[in-house]
Amino acid sequence: MLVKSRQSTSKYVKTRQRTSLGLNYILDVGGVALYGCNVTSKGCLINLFLIYMGTYNKGILGAFSGKVGPVVGASWRGKEVLRSLPRRANRTATPNQALQRLKFSTVTSFLNPFYPVLSRYYGNNTGEKTRLNQAMSYHIKEAMVYNEPVFDMVYNKVLIAKGDLTGIQAGVISSTDPSTVSIVWSDNSGEGEAKPTDKLVIALYEPTLKSTVYSLSVAVRSALTGAILVPTSLTGLTVEVWGTFVSVDDKKYATSVYLGSVLVA
Image (cartoon, rainbow, N blue to C red; front, side, top):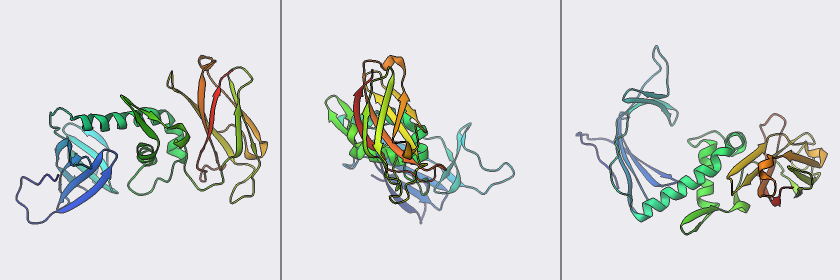
């Protein structure tokens, strides 16, 4: 569905973007006003909005982001823009729309606690999508399943990092010491760009309490063993575990691997 300008105009550019909720159609009228709506792939209306947007060069105050009265400053496709606040239609969601929103909120609530990891090591920060947006897109498409009436994450498909560095080889987790999860692995230093000094990053998730624990530097690759302390509240509960290696300067990182689940001692 396309929302056309109420103003008379002889020239406009239509931009078609795919988002996690469906398709996002935007009218760029001379680079000044944008009108659009979000629709699902089946064409069901999700949110109808009218946004006036204008690009601007950095003036005496420079660029800004955030809300100032009825105006929002932001960056869009590398341009500094000003836009009016959206006016949303007050319509009851259809069952399909409600399902899409549930899907989105499930992934959001799961990934948000991992933001410090994802924002460093997931994909790259160039182009239109942030690292978190890239992670959202992947997990919505590939890492969840609908078990009525809720969506569940598929843990062995979850990725906390995505890169080209050589990852963990033959990783095995255990928990024998109190409030501790341990991991051992094989040394694959020298494969590709893997170095003995690469840092081990570990992330854990306990679904009952929805508790997240992570460490950005558990051990170095050449150590072949490492351990992460967890809160005592997780004692006796099963945690899901993921791991990856990153370079000392954080510029290179491996795609994470799912290490399985373990009962915390």
